[in-house]
Amino acid sequence: MPVLIYIDHADGHIKKSSYELLSYGAGLAELLGTSAEGIILGTFPEDLSALGKYGVRKIHQVSQGHLNESDSQVLTQVLSEAVKQTGAQVMLFTNNITGKAIAPRLSARLKAGLVSGAVALPDISDGFVVRKNVFSGKAFANVKVQTEIKIISLNPNSFQPKEVGGTAEMVELFLSPVSSNLKIVSTEKASGEIPLSEAEIVVSGGRGLKGPENWGILLDLAKELGAATACSRPVADAHWRPHHEHVGQTGLAIAPNLYIAIGISGAIQHLAGVNRSKTIVVINKDPEAPFFKAADYGIVGDAFEVVPKITEAVKKLKSAH
Amino acid sequence: MNILVCISKTPDTTAKVAFKDKNTKFASEGVQWIINPYDEWYGLVRAIELKEKDPSIIIHLITVAGADADPIIRKALALGGDEAFRINVDSQDSYYVAAQVAAFAGQGRYDLLFTGRETIDYNGSSIGGMLAELLQLPYISLATQFELSGTIATVKREIEGGEETDQVSLPCVVSCQKGVAEQRIPNMKGIMGARTKPLKVLEAVAAESMTSIVSFELPPAKAGVKLVPADQPEELVRLLHEEAKLI
Image (cartoon, rainbow over all chains, first blue to last red; front, top):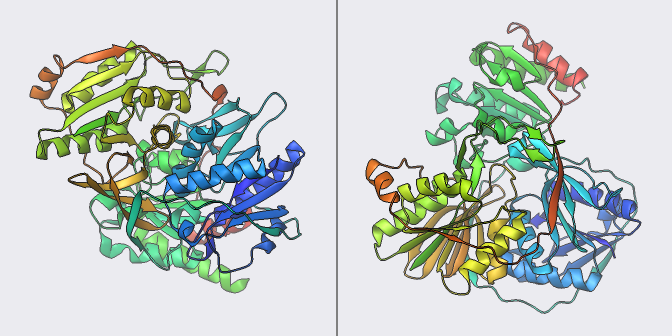
C-alpha cells in the first residue's frame, strides 16, 4: 500500500517541484508506516535511480514514448492502472499545470478524494486531514479525505526537498497502450528562461516602470539574482511584457521564496497571485501604495534610482562570497 | 450545437475573508456575491461570442447552489445564454458538484462544456477534470484561446513556460482562463431580457462527497514592513542576505 509520487518531466528535465514532492511523499510514507514509490510516464534520457536520495526506494516507469506528450484522458487511464497494480493508498501530484489536468480526472475515476493545493503533510491523528490554500491565498482550509484511496496535489514551493541518501530501484510497469482523442498540433516555449512557477526568486514590474523600454533595470537585477521575471496585469494588457509573465488573480499564482515588486501598487487582485510568497519586497515611490501593508521589506523611492543600486549591491555581495 | 457553461457563486474578490462557528464556516454576512470571474469572463463570454457568430448555438448555464445564487444567475443571463438551470443543493465538495453537473449533462446532450480555471474561493481547479472523466470526454485545461471550426475545436492552453495548441473533436470539456475572451458588462437590453429567460430549478441526484472541510484558518498576520531608506539600497541587500537569508 505505498504512497505513489508522480514525477513530472519535460524536455529531459525533472521539474524542481517533483523533488519537493518526492520528499513530501517520503515524509508521508513514514507517517503512514509504508513505502514511498515514484512513477514516471514516458521515456527519460537518464537513469533515475539517483532520485532515491529523496527517500524513495522504487520508481515505476511506463516507458511508452507517446506518454511524454499526452493528454489528460490518456495519462489518467495509465495512472489509474498504475495505482491498481501498485496497490497505492495515496497518489501525489504537484499542483501545477500537469497536476491540475490529471489529478481531478483520476480522482473521479478512482473515486479517490482529492485535496488540491495542499501546503503541508496530512494530520493523521483523527482521520486524514490535509491543509490547503483557499480564498486565493487569504486563508487555509483543513480538508478531511474520507475515501480509501487519497489524492493530494501539493502546491509548488511549499515543502523543502530533503536529501536523505540512497538509491531507488527502477521497475518497468507494463500497461496496455491507450489511444488519445486529442491531437497536439504544436508547442511553443520561451527558451532559456526560468519558469515562473518554479522560480525561488521573482522580480516583478508594474506600471510604475512607465514603459517596456525601461525594463532593462529589472532584467539586470533578475539576472544578478538568478530570478524569474513577472509583471502585473496592466503591464501584460498593454503588451509591455508577454502574457505568461502576468501574476495575479487572473494570471499565474506563484509562491517564490522572494518576490520583489517594482512599481506595483499592490491591488488586491495582484496580491491574490503573490501573497503566498515567503518574503515580499516592495519598491514604490508612493508611500501609500497598499502593497507595503503586505510587504516584509520596502523602499519608498524612485525605482529608476533605487533598482540599479540594488543590482550593484547584489553584484558586490556575490563577488565577496 | 449546444454549449453548457458551468458557473459558480463566489465572494467578491475584495470581500473580507473571515470565519464563524469555531472556524468551520465562511462568514458570509455582508459579503457581496459575484459570478466566479473565471466562469464569467472567459467561459461564458466565449460561449456568447460563439453564439454571436452562429445564432443556432444554444447556451445553457448551470450552477449547483441554493436559491441565494439566483441573482448571479440572472446576471449571467443578462450577459447572454438562453436558459439557466440551478441544481438546488448546497455544494459539498468538488466531486459532489461535478457529479451533479455530469448527471444533468448526461451523455451527448452537450457538444461543448466550459468551466472556469478555478473558483476564487476554494481554488480547487477540479470540476472540469472530474466532469470530463465522469462523461468520458477529452479535457483541455487552462485554455487561453478557443476556436471552433465545424465540430473541431482548436485550443491553445498554458503549459509550463509556454503554450500548446491542441485539436480535438467535439464533444469536450474546456477549463478557461485569461485570453479565451474579454470581460463584458451586461447592457440594459440584456438585463431586461434576463428577467424573462427561463431559470429552472432541479433537484439534486444522489451523489457522494469524498472530502469535507474540518476547519478554516487565517494566516498569521505579517509583522509589518521594514522600510529601508531610499538612499541606502545596499542595506536592503544586506537584510535579504543576513536576516532573511534569501540571497
